[in-house]
Amino acid sequence: MNEITVVLYLVMFAVVVGMSFAFMFTTMRATLNEFNKPSRNMHPEMKDVKNGEELLVFSVDDEDDDEGDIIIVRK
Image 1 (tube, one colour):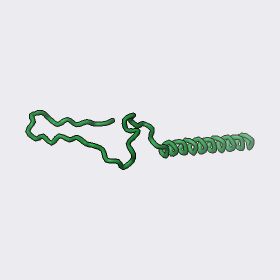
Image 2 (tube, rainbow, N blue to C red):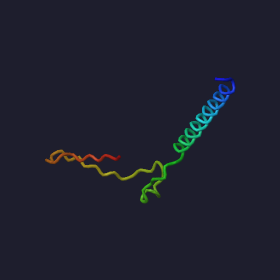
Image 3 (cartoon, rainbow, N blue to C red):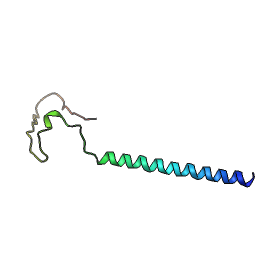
Image 4 (cartoon, rainbow, N blue to C red):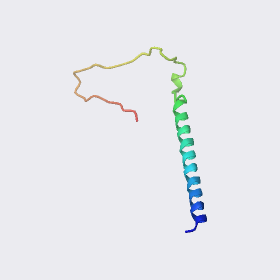
């Protein structure tokens, strides 16, 4: 290989490394900005509830039923 080919290879390698770094930096910045945005998936009935406000909670503590407990899992 002559010197021009080696220099061309090194220049192209530097371009690829620089573009890869810029792509990773931009992608990580966009990902972190998404985490900083507030969640907008609010139920319509919860829009009037202020942060820290107490809500009515219904729980059943019935030990003598023959049925198994119902467990609700959110995915």
